[in-house]
Image (tube, rainbow, N blue to C red; front, side):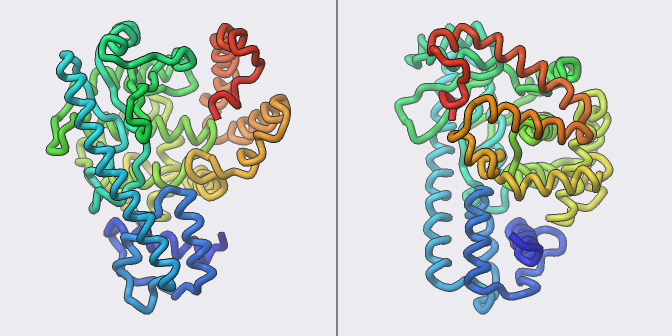
Length: 377
């Protein structure tokens, strides 16, 4: 994607959410080939319905050719239907768990979508539900509710997949409010804060509970940082954070700012603020910290190179064809290249890998595999 097409994408993303300087028209009109490239990028970034929302606001002479527009409209309608289905399933699961006397909240997904100017335009993913009680209680509760537990799901320390009859929706039940950082010391502080903050939940008209804005800003920043360092992030996650900031109060942002350093999130926050300023024109008064251009440029490059959770990075697309040792070495090489971005976090990635490896030895023996990569991909 060239710089001209990137600027067009930024303009469309601003128009879609009514950003400060959005004018409902593009600086330059795109030809059919450029629209096809833009459409391809939007699919990979999972923002196809968001950008279609902007396209509908463009002057007719600036809209894509009819064949591309029809394809885009069809995909946006699919996203809308999936959102409606996701909201209904989230409300249903909320009813099931609250009937068991469980306190719970939706961590991302539908909780974010409801804040969008048009909620149906956010690309629906899975449902992440935090349920109070801890790992042991939840693992005992799920079978009583009729949900089977897959042994491979026991590898995760913070969530388990819910085996629903409705296979069109992926549901994760979290016994911790966040997977934390790679650094165990900042993770401990982060989880203590989030455990306190998630006690403040609100029932919304959509029929489910959401956590406080302060919780959302902190937890989703940690989520972005971890995925950025581990495999990559896309515009879908970045746009979510922009939407959160636009709905936050000055006090919310001040409170989060005071926590960034101790929670190990300051460097990533600075990078993210620069990206939000570059793409959506976010004002400094709406930020949680000062923007960091150097780290922000690296983050933006990674967003384009890997797209949604790094799934479209060239390395990722070829990984199924290479030996697991080559794959491991290439991934470690990427880790080292990010050391300057967040030294403390990257330094702990290798130790986290070793801990996870040895913790999963029983599963590796049971499945007779040294590498579990292809089991989960």
